[in-house]
Image (cartoon, rainbow, N blue to C red):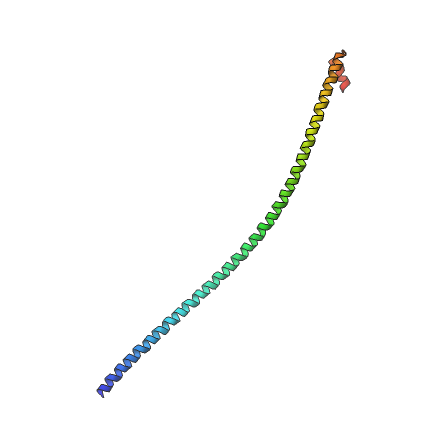
Length: 128
């Protein structure tokens, strides 16, 4: 009986070691599963943040496109005003030329009047 008791204890000890190994493995698997669940939760949270940032980026892109459209419109308006200013500058240049021509004509007329013997005061009264 003693031999059987010893064999039984040894068997029980080996069985305990076997079950202990299984329990340790199960505990490790459960711990890993818990870690995976936590990491999945963090990943989902980060995905949510990424989607939120993506939405903000799309919104900012929309605003940028709107601003670009406004800038394009203002650029067109400035180009139009630049064309108008160029046209008015040409008109002023033409009027300057006309005034220069009239000044030259007036100078000739004054010289002719002086040549005819009129005084500067008489010429000034005639020109008014």
